[in-house]
Image (cartoon, rainbow, N blue to C red; front, top):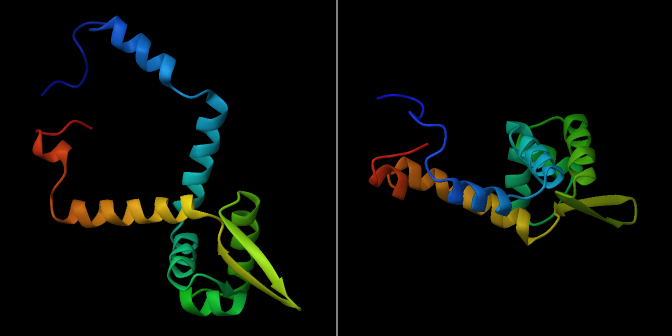
Length: 131
């Protein structure tokens, strides 16, 4: 199997259409930053705990995720700054939740992908695989 193309461009019309449909660089960079935040196992454990519980205070989130409270607080500041989690205050207590349904959907799709990949399924695998 050869990696690479024998010609510079096979279908210039398709390439131009794809380029025209790509988002600008700034949203792509922001998405890469968001996905980078989600790539950390500790933060991802926290997000999964919030997905399951709906809302947790820092100490409960730390206990549920098996992390130190200081690490959770630091991660929550970062996640809040990127609108991945939101906070509500009740007296002196702060309760965190996933910011919106898009974050929940992103986690759900990722988990579904893992389940699907473990079964060896998928259109790419079935088609002989590209990528």
